[in-house]
Image (cartoon, rainbow, N blue to C red):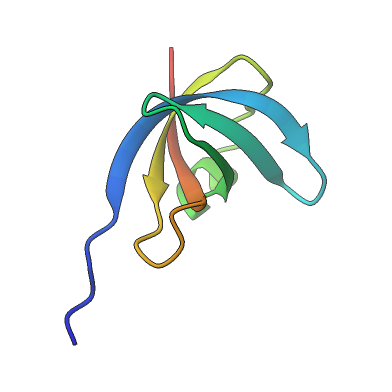
Length: 72
């Protein structure tokens, strides 16, 4: 069985949740719970409510994802 590729979606952080999670309102109208990927964590990228981000949506659970980068 072939694995489905993850897709990238733009969104805005609505709220910061405990344990490194964020709630993001995506351009497609959905709200997803996301976390930071390894590279933004290593480079100390700080994200707060209102920041625009690009997230990678999980192919297995479309309500979850990972923040790939912050858009200026």
